[in-house]
Image (cartoon, rainbow, N blue to C red):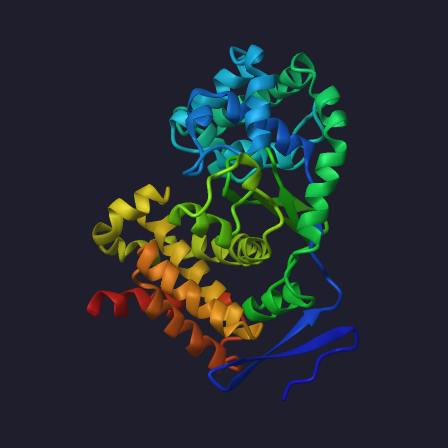
Length: 380
């Protein structure tokens, strides 16, 4: 047994009967807050040609319908046009990174530098310096749009609604100690973890954003409204009609899984980036699932590989939290419904990680071995 200094909590997690040990900072919880910068970007998306046509299956949520109707008169605004340009390149996460790394609109400015990939995604040429100029111009357009659309008045009107949304999320948070379990599992920690429910964003959307501060990395999970599983199943079975008000943030299953998934990206993506070349050696594994992965917006092998790893982590953390049925359901959904067909090999590799903590104290230390799981997948 290892001893830990005072002020640290010792967590013992179990996987197939074998304990793995980590130290985790005490009392770190999940914050919940509607973010008006995010809502401004989400409003713009719903006014773009592409965003206005995107909906989850049955229809739009009541709030998104209201946003599109109320602000239809500013649909030709330059901020909407620039948002549409970004969407045409198949990316809509970068504007959210811009929003959360900026001070409050309508006086927004970039407060924290963005990772190179965001600048490249915003630039039509993929050039970082061009991307920096485009981001600066976009922020100014966002400031203008905020004023021109009268968003301050709208947000004040909607304050009681936003507070209700926050309340719904707070009462459905993952169990106490959840953050400690995640930090313990991956062997690393972040400064803050914030759930950002966004009523104006695409239904069922989920986007992770990181903000680098002097205190460390702040991790934000931006997500849209959802249909609880029982409601969704009833609509699909034809036993009830869809109502826009069916979309809600009062969905514990969705919030718990999104927390594990999007916060999981904050642990996995930075490490996976350092092993991009090694992961790309198995790019031929993308071909058998290309069609389904493209439908799920994972347009290349690296994104697909990272998703496999993050989703395998979800399954193992569910087991660590004592939610075996949830873990089994996730494995079934991910492999059968979403065709993440290499999950069994990744899960098996994570079980070895759990059983060998003295050799691999963090997921980063284990990552070279984890990557080899894709070779096992290729041979089966």
